[in-house]
Each structure stands twice: as C-alpha cells, then as structure tokens.
Image 1: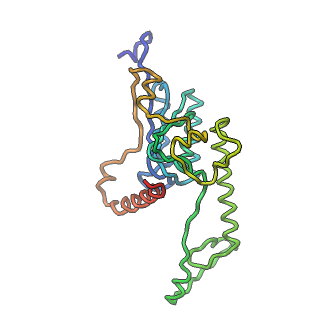
Image 2: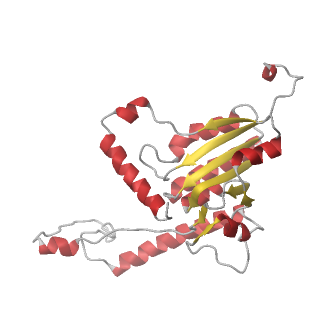
Image 3: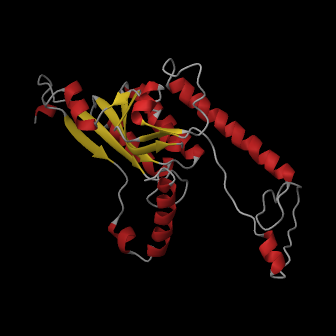
Length: 265
C-alpha cells in the first residue's frame, strides 16, 4: 500500500534479469535481443529499481546479438540512471562476458569461468567424401565470392583470408567494448584478448571482474535487509514444452550442452 502513498518511503527493489544459455539469433530458449527486449525494458521501467542485476550464465554465441543486448542494457541504464551489476554463475565467456561487461560492476563465484575474449568460426570439409562416393558438386554463382567457404568444395586460401579478416574486425569490436566498459581496470602490459579463460580470483587480479561475491548477500549488504528482489527472464509456454517441437528442442539442447562443455561444465 505504501507504494501509493507519496510521503512513505518504499523498500528498495533490485530487478534481476536472468541471462542463461547460448546467445543466438534463432531458436527458442536462446538469448537474443528480440526475445529479451520486453524483459529488459520491464526490468528498468517497473517502478524505480535501486539497481538492475544481470544473472549471467552463458558460454557465448552470436556477436551481433551480444552487442544488441548489451547496447540495450547500457541505453536503459543511462536513460533511467540505474546502476547495473552482473553476477556470473558457471561461466561468462565470449558473448557471455560481453553481456557481463555491459554492467557497471561484475562479481562471480570462486569457481566461475570468465573471459574467452575472442572470435571463432568452425566448419567442416566434405569434398573428399563426395568424391569417393562418386558425387559431383555443381555450384553456379553470380559473384566470385558467393560460394565462399562451401564445405562441399576444396578449401580456397582466398576464402580463408577473407574469413580471417572478418573475424579480426569482429574481434576488434569485442576488444573495444571490453576496453571501454572496463576502462582503468585492465592491465596495460597484458594481452587479455587471446581467447583465454580464467577463474574468478585470477579474473579479479586482471581487472576483468570486480571481485568475488554472491547476489543476495551483496545486495542485502548494499541496500539493506528490507531490499526486495523482482525477477525477470525468458519463460517457455506450456505449448512449447509439450508440443511437437521436441526434436528441435533436443537438437538445441545438445548444441547448448556442447557450448558449455568446452569450459568443462
């Protein structure tokens, strides 16, 4: 009731946005700007939160979606003048660290994995298999680079060179984001952008995070015992849980499991 009475002070509220899973433009249950936009907007706009917390547990994914989500968080933080604090669970790697770096402060558990500030592109080559099976690959294009990195044709060194140039440019964007968000906290004599990962204590020493800490005790210590927590995150509908999309969900689950597995999780 006191929320509606002007002269009574309300208890502070911390809005918690859960960012858990692979970052991808497509796929249910994955993190992307389209699905998270209403959640992030609501977290910043409902009342006047004392802070917005990002609960991050992601091995990364799409650099574009990472950038869009991070930019939305920063835009609203500045517009609403609300501090943003990230708490890392198992991992904030690659795009997951991009999201964490959108916060003003980053904390993690002792055993959290942090970093992987790099860019990767993986594919396969099946042209020899096709040849052994007597299958001829026929591709017709308008534009000499239109069939770049076709996995069913022999690798073209020029294609690889072009791909590496693209990856370098994306890597530069990633480095610029981290450097800007962690300004004054990163060592000048250490290259942190090699794709390497660290546990939380080492990440603290390197300036990638601000310390070891857990969400509830830190927020209670900062905002008092009466602080209230309001959670926001992606939810699956009953239909999506029990519909005929089970096979697609299984594939997505395998892909996500593989992404976490590279960090021993």
